[in-house]
Image (cartoon, rainbow, N blue to C red; front, side):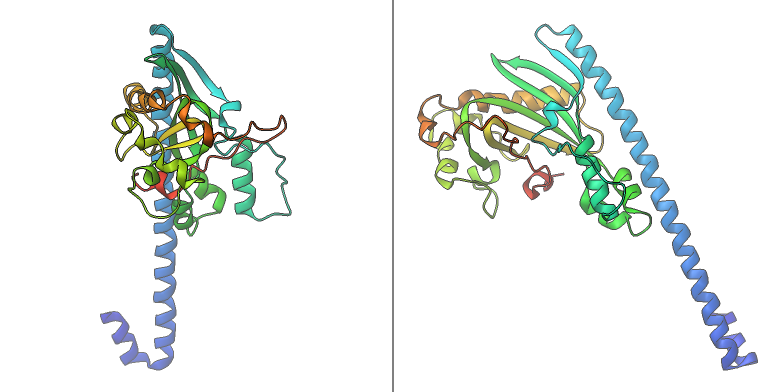
Length: 280
């Protein structure tokens, strides 16, 4: 600032404009460099998270090999259907970069680190899904392209699936437990039903992890940067599967959904639901 006023005093108003322009250019250049450094730091953190997730996946494989009745699969495209996977051809041009990136992600999405087993006789499956964090992308894309921002800010959604005896309407835990606002169910009557039955309320995890009934699946999920290790993944299943086992076998019959047509695409599970991301 001292230099700024000195230039103004000695050279007059013309020099003032030049000095102001130079100062503005300097600030802009600093902002660009600072933004690039931030993106590099985010990408470096993402690389560390990917490495940690690879180690956790290897641990799951070794765990399955040691434990009788456990099965491991490195990845599965079929299990990702219903969790955002949409097989499709993505054109290289003719659509915006955000649309191309999101469509490409949906086309290539697979379930990773698949761990299957039984808890108290009930089947459970734990998988990881790479998901785009649209909230973080909105901020980081100001400093780089959308595709680079989406890759650098991906999260890992660990999902546990317990199996229900029949296809039932969608209902999220925030609605069933009365701990959230808004409508998080396709059938308010069914949403009130589970906790009226002995054993279900006691088995229902309170708060975290969020869970939902989606047709014949009871789904719980945890969002993180690098996925869950073996102890955390099996702990998630241990908290969720007893709830699936506590569901009545015959009483929910009046809420049963019709069986899907042979060519019907499975209903999408929206990992971006606010109730999922709220307790990150």
